[in-house]
Image (cartoon, rainbow, N blue to C red; front, side):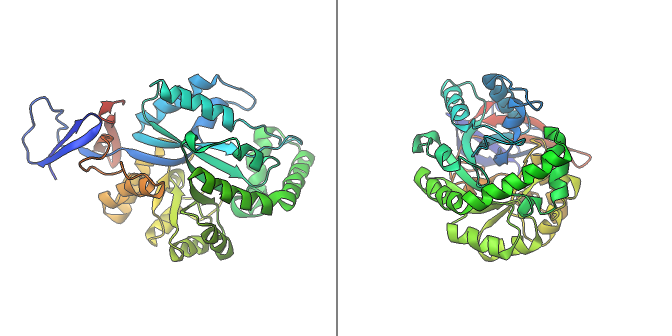
Length: 362
C-alpha cells in the first residue's frame, strides 16, 4: 500500500492511500513504514548500569544511554527488566537494586528526559533469599506491566546443562572450581527452602500490581501446565519443542530471542527459534541482550515465512497485546504515532527514521 499517515498531538489521525505527497509531509521515497517496535524483555539497562563486573555506572547516565540506544534501533516501547530477589552471601551474591532504580526511572520519565515509552518488567527470581520482601516494595503506581517467574536453579530450565552455567557464571564472577561447586549447592538449597513459597507469592504479587504474568525457560509439559494454572499470559524462551507445543495447546503466547534467530541457535544449547518458527510455534520476538537484533530478526522471519506483515507483528502488535497495551503496535487511526521508516539493503533493514508519539527520536 502506498499512502500517507497523519500524526497530530501524538496520535494517528488519518491514513490515506495514493501516490500524492501532502504539503509539508516527509516523503519516504518508497521506504517501508511500520509501527514502532515493542520490547517486552531486555537486559540492556543492566548492561549500561554495570558495563563491567563490579563497575557501578551513574544510573541517570545509564538510563539515558539505554533509552537512546533503544530509540536508535526502532524500539519505541520497552518493558525494562529489573531483577527482584537477592542473595546476600556466597561467591555469587548479589544485592537488591530494583526499587531504587525504578524510582529513578520514574523521575526521569516524569521530567520528559526519555525519548521512548518505558514500563517496568520485574524479573522475580524464585531462587533467592528476599524475593517477596522486594516485590512488596512496589505499588500499582509504578507501572509494573510484567512480572516474570524466573528460576535459575542449576540443573533445570535454562541451565539443565550445568557446564553451560559454569561457562557463563564462573568466568563472569572469576570463580574457581570449588567456588562454582559451592555456588551450585547454595542455589539448589535456596530453591529447596524457598521455591514453593516464592512461586506462589510472586503470582499473588503480580495480581496485586495488575501486571501480566510471564513464565521463563519452561522446559517440560509439566512446567507449562503449572504456568497455565498460574495464569501466565506468555512464555519467555521455552527451551524445548515439547514446551513450546504445550504452550500452544494452553493458549500461552510463545516468545523467543532475536539473537537466537540471528545466530541460528541458542547460546545455552536450547531449542532453535527458527525451528519453532518453521513449526508455527513462535508469536513474539524479544531483543533479549542485543537491542539491534529485534528489527533484523523480524526481517529474517519475513524471509522464512515470505510474509513481512506477519513477521513485523511479532515485534509490534503481538507483544503489545500480550502486555495489555491496546494503544500501539499498529498503524491505525487513534493509536499512538509510533512509527519507523525502513529501507532494505541486501536483505538487511536500514532504519531511516524513528518517531515516538509523532516526535522524531532517531
